[in-house]
Length: 95
Image (cartoon, rainbow, N blue to C red; front, side, top):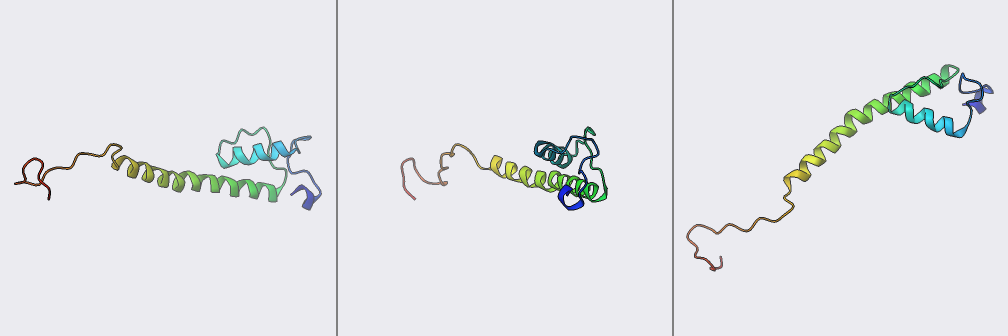
């Protein structure tokens, strides 16, 4: 964004480093929003809003998918149960 607009992305002077861009995106996606760095102009703010919405959607729907997979994993026994004999079969008899 800074290359397109010829102005700094962040409102805070000296904050334009690759690490700050990564930090800002991560904090925005997790919707923590510390407020120590913020976008300086409209398009940057729209990117931040988009990242926050994506973060919320991931938490909502990604969490549902993980919970479902955990439930399915709990239904599968880790140790196989011994087979139950059919009624009327003697011990050692084969079906």
